[in-house]
Amino acid sequence: IPGVEFTAVTEVDDQEVCYYDCNIQKLIPKQEWMKKTESEDFVKEVALRNNQTCTLFTNQTGEILNPFSLSGAYIYQRRYGCTWDSESKHSNKFDAFGYNGEDIITVEENKYILSKQARDKWKEDIAEGFLERDGKDCVSWLNDFLAFGKSHVERIVPPKVFLLRKDPSSPVVCQATGFYPANLTITWTRNGRAYNNTVDPGEFQLNEDGTFQMSSTLRVTPEEWKWYQYDCEVNTPYGSWKHLEKADLKCNTDSATLNWREWVPYGCGLLAVIVVLCALAYCCYGKCRKSSKGKFLSQCTVHSCGVCVFVFVS
Figure 1 (tube, one colour):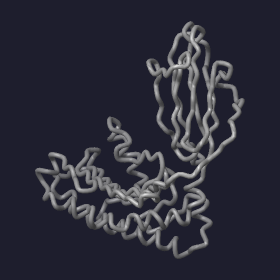
Figure 2 (cartoon, rainbow, N blue to C red):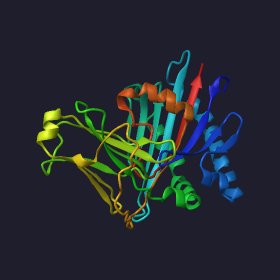
Figure 3 (tube, rainbow, N blue to C red):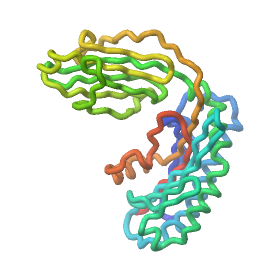
Figure 4 (tube, one colour):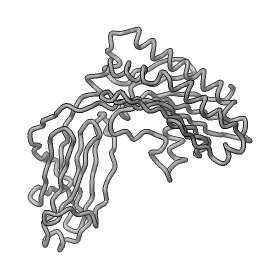
């Protein structure tokens, strides 16, 4: 299709595993385990699947967008995939389409939602067909990635925890960073009781090294900080926790690292996720969806699997 650009990025737990340029049909590994894998067949299979995805997207572009009156530049994004629990063996498929930053279709197990624009233009059975056709091999694909990247995907890295403040009149920030996977909670107490009144909870952020960080901000006056005993607790589901109090407070320009008590992981079920999405779509579509960020682009706290297409026509 003249003027159309297709790109795809495979992510495992929000970490880029490989990039595929559909225009030159080349797979570029991004993780060391993907670069060092000795299975040429696996790499070829990943490249083949991405190539087939690009071909499918090319064919679908007209089918999806023909009902709309297009002029100038437009963005088409698709994300489909599944979640899978290794203990219960339960999987859930999902499929979603976006056009110029607006939802067209959202499909999950046994239900689908069409936007008014799509409902007026489309035959409803199209949505069901996409989920059945593209979701059937998702769990198999997911397990392939888990098999070759198991040591990376299933690793556990404990967080470093800090209690920070710029100056006596600034908010107090409880920060956990350098942890993996993104499964952690930060809570505050005042005089031993749960406290949420002036707390701004943060969201998981991805570090450059593939680990995560998260912060929770306590907004109190210097007098309140002096009168009451405020404590921050960082908890994980892996058998460890951290308790910070006033004595642990650091200036946020201080590079000192707080001690972390012994890390004791325990067995837990693996909920796996792989996400394949488009690099350019991440930037362009993210700008279109500021009011509902995270709905289309994955914000996984464990693992998942999906595919997304980005189409840009000028």
